[in-house]
Length: 240
Ligand code: MN
Image 1: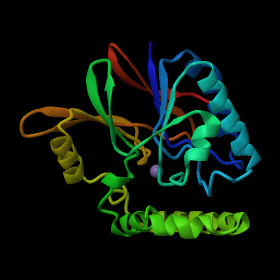
Image 2 (image 1 turned 135 degrees about the vertical axis):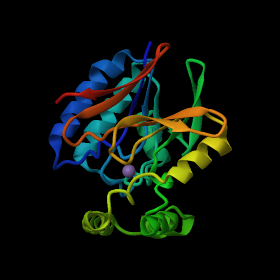
Image 3 (image 1 turned 90 degrees about the vertical axis):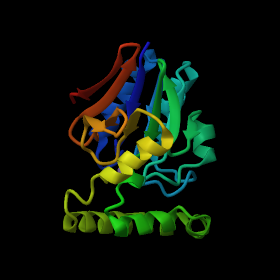
């Protein structure tokens, strides 16, 4: 049996082809999997579990069908959908994971993360991250009306796009010291994350051993999946 990992689909109604591919993936390969892990940014934005967005409702229904068929689905927040909460979990049947979280995969201890917390060279982003993850900020945001939250999310997306164009590529990648520190502090040999949209399997040389950092790809132009079974991990493209 195979365990599947995906992240960074950035589902939104204006890009229906991504949603179509996700639905095919859930009904096809995922239906025969041992488990499915979604490591964040499944949605391009999430303004609250009460959002009646019909595109998202279809996606939630398909996840529910997969869970009901007997495939466990685990979800970790990304920086776009960090407001996903208990109601989403109840509606879809997914299990919410902390970031980071260690799982045992066929005898290997693997640390799962969305990945944005490792991008510490982007100081401005980390400040925003710290603020928006606070209980105070979430409370303030969730007290707004649906319309206000939709407008806020749209504004935040525009600002994020403009900001990303001004920041260098290396700044938006993970920081090597943060990566090495994570391996050292957590005592694990494999780190699996998304967020950077740079799919690859990197060897990381530590003082006492060599470790692996596996990066999932985004779904903008094609799908990306990590298939893991008793023979180890395989990072593969899902042609659209
Ligand atoms: Mn992300």
